[in-house]
Image (cartoon, rainbow, N blue to C red; front, side, top):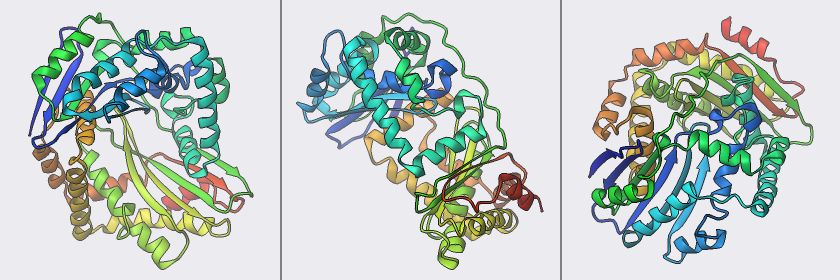
Length: 420
């Protein structure tokens, strides 16, 4: 398998990987702009724009966009994150040109019809309402806000309902003008694709775009903050802690990933064994690492009863401190094996490969080989894990709690316990 990367004269990057034996391909456009590139008055517009891309272009109606891909048995979708908006398809190899034509059309030529804006506004308001009705989703948004208050990276991707109510055509086209410049676009394709053909199609679709300067996102500033919402109608308390962690670009990124896995990444992890298996204080508990361009967050989540929340939160802090001092080589080896297996299993899919390539080009400007990535995983030592674990005992810590949480410990109390 070979990865090839080219750049059009205007800055659009084109990356492909041919996967022998496949009859299908995944391809899409990753725009290096998301929620953290919004101003306060724009909060939620990147996501709104993603929805509107499917609501009609200069040459296709909303139905025709869907039919163009589904008539050939394909699949089309999109997502918005804090740093990226992605539009992608999965099609058979003979329909790669069609797939790229549809994706380039919805990215470059949305019409933002007034009637469709109103229809989709209602859809997004329903999506916001659904999210607010899902405690183990909304609590993560609150954690993000507690860690990054009054910053774009701390705001929700969906945006508040009052903002969504106000967006119009000029707001949408203005965000496109600001952030959809050719230097922000990465076309990525994997599977049954030919690089030269994809490059030719990309030149035809995107080569006319004029280069322009795009705004840079504000640097993230960590804060130790908390949000506790008491809701006695819920059965469980949804408890989260967040800790400052390395960015994608940081040398300590892989150590942080391995540490998070050993601490709470599976059934054999410390948190699962101590909090659930031995104490029975929860059904679900895990830790995970999220990373951005300039910072990261290790997140710990658990759901428990209102009567057990104080004991559970204290135990999580105790386990965090204990792991910083006595993580073992066996735990490191297990986490390393899990991480490598997860990476390799995930990349059996052309969709996963296309996404990986786009994200790596966005971060590094090239696609490191799998062997390079695995070498970095292999290079992590127990000392590296210990150093990251110790950093968590003094790093900024944020907390969000939702549910029958009247007995929950305060952030100040947990910070004191961590420092003791």
